[in-house]
Length: 475
Image (cartoon, rainbow, N blue to C red; front, side, top):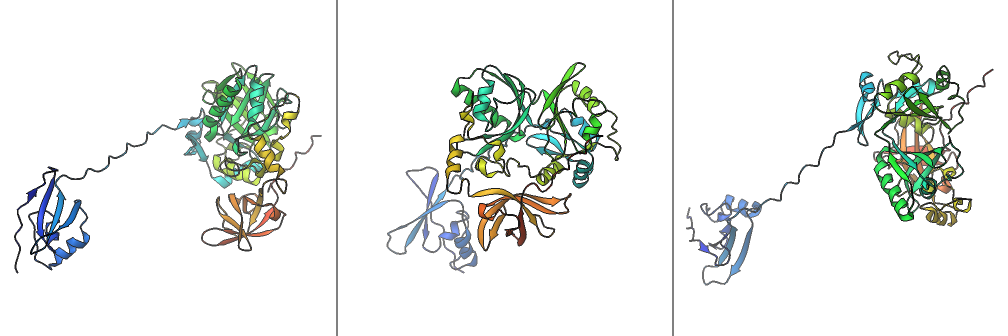
């Protein structure tokens, strides 16, 4: 077999790192792996190199020549540098609540939740769900943000950022509200506590705390308002005692707390500390939420709340409950969750919480327009008197649960989207929440949910799915 001789390399007068090699036509592939290798014309290796080789980079130019024709193959003598590897993202340690030790002592399954180490469950999600529905559960909700506002313009700031009236709140009253953006979407849902004429506490969702702090500051500066804002999240803890037997438990050591009306609170003095107890919750059951100081005082407060309860007894009236069952409990109660039924791109009038939106609050005495009010008024004035889709509930047939993002269809047309779904431990069937065309909201409307792997049959139903029985009057 005849082999060809490698021609002498020629130096380029332009780039010292470029090597120009004269190669007979149809034989340039012999040099693809370097100037020391060559193959006979038509050799299999030559064909393979010509069709598959990709590096080093080369420029091939045809130049006129007598006989035989010649190709110029330009090989880069220096390797092409790879882009630098981006530095790894910084890892921040998870925040721990003052009850972290308690969770580990009771074998909580800990997870990362909005940057906090939180218990997803202890004994099991369904078991804890049923414990809350039938007796009582203790939730650590210290990851929720707590922002204190005090000063001459504290009320005015809250009027401007909250969708609900603040001026007519009484001292000792809580009020659920939305914080909207300029387009009428929802930045977050919050609970406002009125501690004094010019002093408030605002409880916000964990994932939105820093965003809302920045928003509050922006509104304060724009209005040149005089007040002091203090993020008290890391200096305090917050727990929730939820369930039908919680008031009976609390009545053993307090007469004042069981006498509270819904969305009212009291401040209790405990030796060297104070706790704020409100008759609020996020489970659909009766109960309280308690804000208490962090540090050593948290042990004193917990002993006060857990008097006569052995948390290690599986039959105790009150047992630890994780965030997992808190989600299934709030779904049964038809309560919206930020990131699901609430969001920056979701119109506040779609979310089923119209009671928390006062579009005429600027007309009242001391009233103020809130951020997003004009956009919501425009939505209200549209044909049909509101947004084209609103939140409703669904009973889903079978054992497969609908999940967030699944498309809802009617007669082959897209008519909505699922926002939340789960198998309901209380009802023994699958439930879901979602936005649907308002014309299809009447109860019993049959729809189909595209699961991606099949179709789920469902029917609309009003929210909530579950409503706790009113406690029997005491004789």
